[in-house]
Image (cartoon, rainbow, N blue to C red; front, side, top):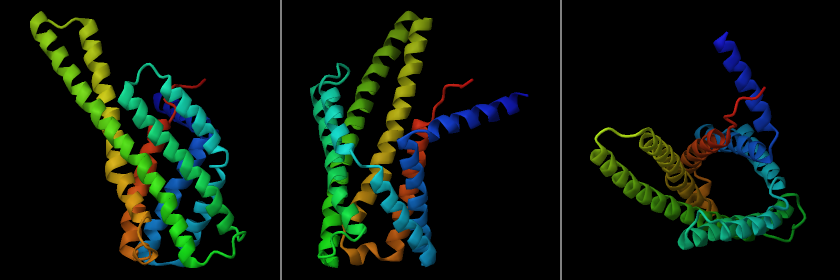
Length: 243
């Protein structure tokens, strides 16, 4: 019965998750990067077609995102949980994401044939400029998470010292250490995703077309992008049991 209940919870959570734009984007991203990886490995055009189709479909999900980014910047600047530097890093991150989405409107028009005057070389340059703003979105995330981990390390040392002084740690102290460890785990996952998965992919997309078309580069970028997508899905999966 417990297993059946767990399966039902998973089913209900998947419904709640699928009903969000974020879920559609990250799920499509996972299949898109899987297609890129398989295209690099097999060179079968069916995977290339899937890759291009999913890439275009995800651009539609970014419509109006630049406007939403303005509100996110406002919220970051007013967030009392962020210090001055973290606020600046978050603003750079969100502004880069907004600029990426704004420029992506132009690439969408090019993909549907509205900018036929653009030659392949100009299209390649446009794509590389676009991906530069993904790079500038990733760097602040890495910086912020490294700062968070160093801050949590100091807090852990202080709590350990207090535990040693008290002899027997109180329930409050145990709870504090537990919550700190959970925050540390989440920060490590975010840092891994940004530094190991997203950063190399952003550098890949800023390279010339000749580099990006090599099968080996498609394969490793696809693999890293798939891992990053699965991490995003896991992080945003609704954990609360639904009735």
